[in-house]
Image (cartoon, rainbow, N blue to C red):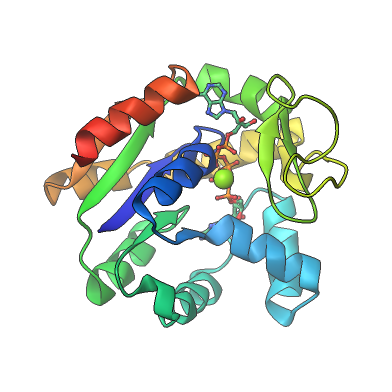
Length: 205
Ligand code: AP5
Ligand code: MG
């Protein structure tokens, strides 16, 4: 099963992708997570990507497309995958369409007014990438590996505003792109995490 999960920054893509991938045994391919790992590892790609990410801008297509192509070469992608955060504009969608066929594009439809609060409440683990919210975290330590949870670099309010603007201009039109291909599944992302997951699983049956 080849899946995409799409939606605004903070719409819950990573949260839902983790659950979907666990249930369906799919690799979770998040370009944001891959880029953050490159930054943490100090790679050339990470050095090039950091300024764009910290400003809430898209990392240039050639860098992200090369990253995705390399990831698809790994053996765990043979039986499907879930893409989170890719494609993010029409150029990336066209490249993707030339490589693989997408079975379903899950769109998390969330009121943009809710997003700033969700992002202000997000906490992430710098060691293993685990992500949660202050409401759900029992303490300030990662429940997976015990490292201290931190606020993501691009979750500052001014950067969030820019990410939402970039999303509206470049990624939001992809909803129509996948609708026209007949693979779009729209889910009400305003509901609870469990409820959103149930809507997704019903659509995947
Ligand atoms: P990326 O990491 O993909 O960030 P994003 O798309 O902005 O999305 P987020 O990860 O912020 O949110 P999410 O939808 O995963 O929500 P989450 O589940 O965490 O990209 C970061 C940057 O990398 C980009 O700005 C760009 O620079 C670069 N980049 C990445 N891909 C690229 C590409 N293809 N091309 C070019 N550049 C690229 O949830 C958020 C919070 O809400 C959490 O606290 C969570 O616990 C909570 N929450 C989740 N669901 C619910 C719910 N139903 N109810 C209440 N709270 C909820
Ligand atoms: Mg995410």
